Length: 215
Image 1 (cartoon, rainbow, N blue to C red):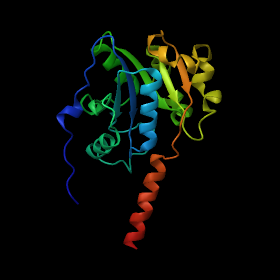
Image 2: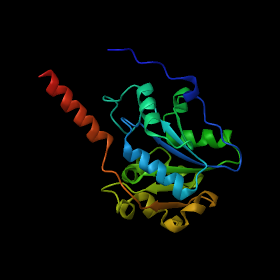
Image 3: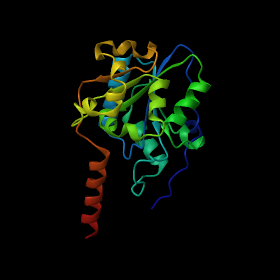
């Protein structure tokens, strides 16, 4: 097996954004990244009016089993191969800062980018477990949140703890373009095209193929 290349320095730097810009933060293990992730990113860029979207490939997810986690450089390379919009910046700076939780990432980028308007972007399939994230209520109070529809999760916001706890802070998706200028807590659920692809199913498919070839 060919050895995995180290993470390039450019991927370990926090992307640059000038004051006044609107930047979406889209984090995940992307294990592997797929067209569904790209669709979430593209919908967020378009509907939120983002100047940039930081596609943040994390070293690992505290809520997931890391047994099948592909090497970080591989996940970065696959993410870059998926994205063609120049506004989407693939980065793994969390590895350089040894950040393990989204709340830490948000605090860091806000402290180092005064004047930049950040929006947290996540797929609706993450909404059900969002209340298990470390300091999840602090996240809601630190920056606006955009939840993008995913297959099987269209009605997730109705029962999600985020929706029940911050129901009065929900913004109609028709006003999503103004979300970044709103004072948190503010969140919206954005409907749109959906991809049925999932990282879990892709890993299962690949594992099954590998097992078949070795039999």
